[in-house]
Length: 295
Length: 226
Image 1 (spheres, rainbow over the protein chains, first blue to last red):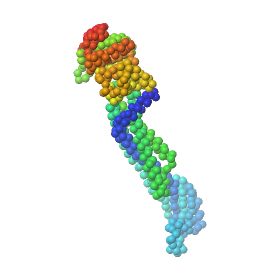
Image 2: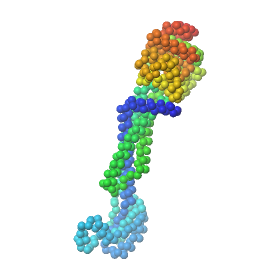
Image 3: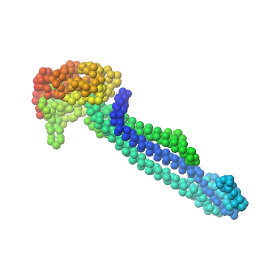
Image 4: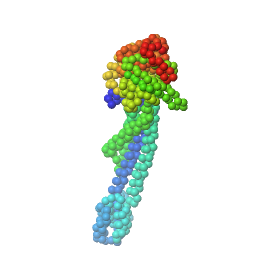
C-alpha cells in the first residue's frame, strides 16, 4: 500500500468518525468502560496476590511450651524443631522476653507487672518459619507431637482464604470483562455498519473505478481501530488518575498494606489495555466488513 | 477491443428471464458504437457483462484480449481501471466538490497525490469546468453534472468508455454538448460504447448502431440510424 493511499484512508476514517459523532462516541465510551473494568480487575487481582505473598512470608508457627520445663530442657528442644522437614528458622522466645513484648504492646501507663505481682504467667515460645507457606499445617501437626509442647498456633485458614479470594476475583473478573467486551464489539460493529451504509454510494463507485477490496476496507478498519484506541486512551487516563489517588490515600491510612506501585507493572498493564482496545476495534470492523464487499 | 461469442444471459428468479440470447459482437479499438432498442431489450445487461459486473450464463466475452470468464476475482479491480463509466443519473457524491468527485476516482486506484493534483484540473479543463472546481454538484446544471461524471470516467485515461444513457436526463442542447465531448474523447483513440434512447442524436452522429430487441441483435450497421 502506498503512503498516499494510507493518507486517503486516514482522511476518510476521520471524516466518517466525525460525521457519525454520536455513534462513535457511544462506541468509544463502551470500549473505555470495558477496559476500565478490565484494568481495575487486573489491579485488584495483582494486589491481592501481592498481599497473599506478603502474608505468606510473614506466616509462622508459634509453639507454646509446657510451664514445668526447665530452661535447659527448653533450649534443648531447638534441634528437634529444626529437624522437622520444611522448617526454615527457629527462634526461641523466653517467657521474660514475651512479657516485655506484651508490656510494650500494652503501653507505658499500664501496671501489668504490678498486677501480676512478680509472677510471669507466660510460657516459653518457639517461633518456626517455614520455607513454604503450604507446609505450615504439616509443620504445626508434627511439632504438636513433640513432648513438652503445650499448644501450637498459626494463622489457620488465612492464607487459604486469601488465595481463594484471588481465584474468585479472577474468574468473576474474566466473565465480566468478556461480557462487556462483547458489548463493545457489538457497538463498534454497528458503528462501522452504519458508516458503511452511509458510504455505500462511494463504495459502489470505488468498485466501478477499480479500487481493490483492501483499499475500500482500510478506512473502515482504521475507523474501528481509532475508536478502540481512543477508548483505551481514556481508560488508561482514568485508571492512572484513580489509582494514583487510591495509592495516596491508602499509603496515608493503612500504611502496612503492600500496594503495588512500581511503574513497570502499571506500564505493562497500560500497554495491554491500549493493545486490546485497538484489537477490539479491528475485530469489530472485521465483523461488519465480512460480507458487504460482495459485488 | 470487445468480443462476444454466443453470449446468453438468463436471470433465474421467480420467473426465468432471458435477457440476452446468442449475442455475437465485435467492437474494434477506437470505435464509437451506439446500443439502441426499447426498454428491456438487453442494453443494460450487455453493458454490465462488458464490465464484468455480471458473468454470462453461456458464451465467451473478451475485453482487451482478456477472457472475462477466466478472470480471477482479485484481478477484476485492475481490469476495471481500463474502463470509464458514465451513468444516466451521474452518481456524483453530493457532499464533495467537483474537484473531490474526480480526484476520488484516481485516489481509489492509488495514484499519488502529485499525480492527482495535475490530472484532475487538466481533465476538468477538458470538459470545460475549470472554473467550477470548488462547486458542489447541487450548484451545477444537469449538463455540468454530466460533464463532471465524464471527467471522472476519463481521468484515468481508459481504453474504453461505457456510457449508459448519458443524455437521458438532459435537454437537447445540453445533450449535444455532452455528445461533442464524447466525440472528442473518441478522437483521441478511446473506444466508446453508448446505450441510448435518443433517436435524433443517433441519426445525426452517423456512427455504428447496434440495435437490440428481446435480447437479440436485430440490426448492426456501420454509420447507421436509430
